Image (cartoon, rainbow over all chains, first blue to last red; front, side, top):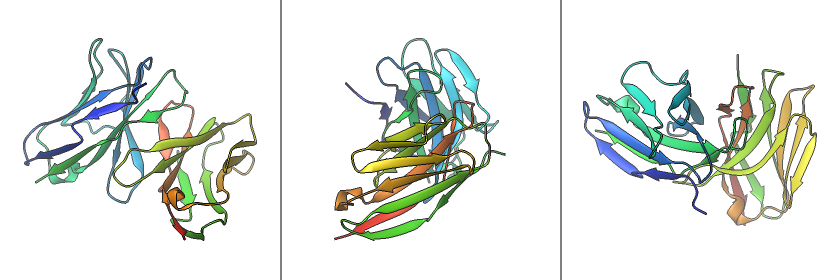
Length: 113
Length: 111
């Protein structure tokens, strides 16, 4: 019974490049959440998606960031033209229903050089 | 606003003793209060949660208590062991599906 999968686990990008982070939810889960964690800080909500729909993107910067959760395949968090301040750990969580328990993946650690 | 405060930020406890971490929140409409344990280099692991219609919940050495009137909830770990050393985060669902996290408590168990 696999948990939430994220890849890559580590990603290094130079300033100006694009970063693509992938998340496969737990089996049977159709709700996906993305959170960002800066060093020595708590997690901050970015975006909440269900299959083919963005439900809440209030925590995601308006520019350069986008997310999708297609009918088939993993959820993708995309960061265009990365800057040093984007360096962080990005975590994906999934849940069975709205208001159900959220289970987290191992995260993707993005480093922008 | 939707705020969660967590105390203490660091906690050292002798092995075998109890540890208590407390969180306060701002909005009485909150309905779900999970606790997560995060080890170095790993994702947060859900260890226990409580919903607004329950005052206390226990799972072996871990318990959570909720006081909705005072808007605070606490994590209690009894008979602490070295493997309990980690960063613990409280979180609150303010009725909008997303979780708002506290700033974390670094728990160190002293052998």
